[in-house]
Image (tube, rainbow, N blue to C red; front, side, top):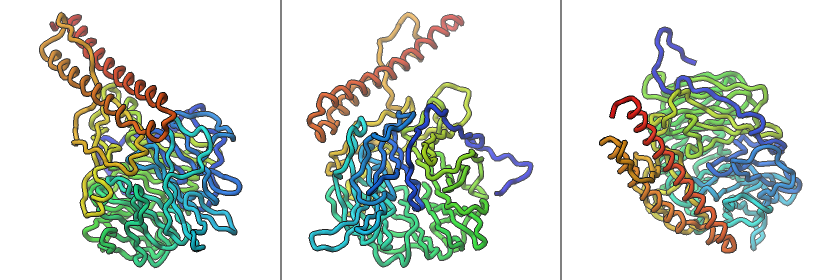
Length: 531
């Protein structure tokens, strides 16, 4: 680590602290898989958490609502349509009810879950990727039939990566050293990169706009690849000289952060400028442990969290434009080692508690949430901690991205708490809704003006509240019309109507809270004699 005596670097994230949730809010009796795969084994979005578990005679993973706590009964339904252990699961960034899983299966031995090896009609071994659709209320019975099956890899598949801005684009990497880019909506293999990597692929990561990707490989080379042209734009041999696996993640400004091992088996963290990979911008020695460091990146705060498999700690850093570029902030330490970790997207954090990140730490038979919080005394929304973040709306159609278009993510405001839109599972073949980026909150407001006590400025604020109320009502109607649960499950139309009404009521409650705050400030002014 690098420390400068006598100089205190100014940063609003300098005092971020991690706190594990109480035991009653954890999940117990979760039989986390023992598969020896260097992956997180868990995926989390604002609605659900998916955990790969032990399963006899095949592979399975649990899908539980984030509100679930306590003991998980052994009879809880699972996603169990695989003939071998699951290796990776990833939630679709554009639909919180769609999840992809990858596994390994062989007719002789049991291996991974989501990618399944079987025989096609010609009797040729094929690896298959499965796409699942989870109902809004979670699973009520075991899910065995996938919505989409993708076949193309010849060996087990252990890496999944959804495109950050294009609808239905999924990247997979297998032990056959091949990268495949799929259009999930049609089930078509769009691009196949089979001649780039001579050895096992360790990790893949899309850039912020999804125009390029970076990969790490067993040959110790860091590559920047344009998948649409099938070419390597940049590469760096021996990014880390150790023989243990490397990981890489694209940052929002186009830089790349990697974790790996030195020649002396010391764990390292390095930052690279994609314009010149000849030398790293910064290198930091972490420790001498053997666990692979899994990087989790938050583009809104520009913070990186490092979770080592088998470690008892989570380290977090801030990446800036000033030397030494990567600044160590602090670490969270516990007594129990972690077998994996799930990183909650920013749309799911609690803005009322100044929570900027949340992990779901996997123990041997337990899942423990850990919140990363910035200490603030004010109860108001902290806009500097929560810039507009990537929402669930895609920026491009799959065919637009394939045609060469790129676009930044569609941003949403975190003010007032983000309310997830209804499931869009059936839009796997639909068109994305184009939304203008807005820095203002989409929070609602209702109520009539109280002319006896309002001041001129607050009267203007109430007019704005009324306009936001109309927007909330229109948004509620739009959510009702866009609800796809009824399309996927016609028998659940009544349930969909109830859920729509609940969302509308939630918007009204938020609006009333805003109105109450305005009135309380007016009463305080009258009592103080300011009016």
